[in-house]
Length: 381
Image (cartoon, rainbow, N blue to C red; front, side, top):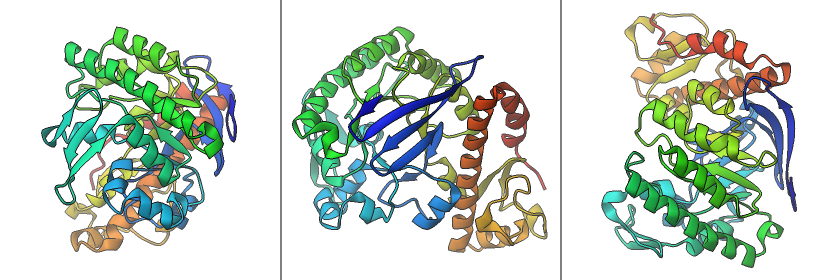
C-alpha cells in the first residue's frame, strides 16, 4: 500500500493465526508493527520527557483532539509550530477524533445527525463537534494520522442503539472523507483512518467493515471495544472485524492495553494499539514486569534490594531498587510515578518487540504460553 508519503509493507506472517509484522512509513518516520503508541492526551505523555520516550523504543504517540481543542486550542498549537514542535516529538503522531471522549461525556452531551454538542469541561461553554469540524481541528493540529469522527454506542450490547450509532458512524465517515480530500488528502501530510463500529454483534461488525472499506483510505481502525463489556464480548468484537480489514493497510485496534489484549489482538491481525494503562498504572503505583505485576506501595517491599526487572531491565531505572521505589511512592514524590511509568512503557515496548520477533520466527504461540502466565500474575513480596 502506498498513499503519497504513507506506505505499509507487510513482513512475516504467522501460519497458526492472523498475526503479521509490517512497517508503517509516515512523513515523520517508520513504525515497525505490531506497535504500542503511548498516549499523550494533552500534548504530553504524563511525566515522561520526549527524549525518554524515544530511548524506551516508542516510535509513534497519540494525542487527543478534543482536549487540545478545549485547551490551548488548535489555533494556538498551529501558531506554536504544530503538534510535533508543541510536543517536542519528531516521530509520527496520531490524533484521535474525540468520539470516545464524547461517549464518556454522555451525561453532558447531545448527539444528532449533524454532530455532537456538549459543555466544555474547562469553562462550561458550549462546544459543537461535527465530522467537518473534527477534520479541520486535526488538520490544524498537524498530526500524521487523523481519525474519522465516529459515534460510539453507550451500550455495545444494545442492538438497536448499536445499529443506530454504527449507521451514523458510516454517514459521518463519508463527510470526513469528503472534507479530508477537499483539503488535499495525503498531499497535506495527513493520513485518514476510518473506524469500524458494530458493538458486540458479529453481523454488525462485518457490515461495518464493508461500509468503512468502501472508502479507499491509508488505514483502518476498530473502535467501540473495551467499553465495559465482558472480555469475551470484547474479543469477539475485534475478532469479527480485524481479520476482514484489507491486508495491505495498517489495522489499528483502539484503546486496549494489557498483555492479554495484545496477544489476543495480534493473533487477529491487529498492528497498532494505544492505551493509558502504562502511565495510569504508574501513577497509581502498579508496575508491570516480566515476572508479574507489583503493587509498589506494599509494605513488604520496604527493605527490598531486588532489581526492578532483571530479565527486561529498563535503563532509566538503573540503580533503583524496589525499596527505593516504594519510598518514592509512599511519600508521593513525583519521581516515583515517573519511574514506574517509564518501567511500564519499557515493558510494553519489550513485549511488542518480542512478539514481532516471535511472529518472524513462527513461535508466537510458544511466546504466549511462556510469558502470559508470568507477567499477568500479581507478585507478592
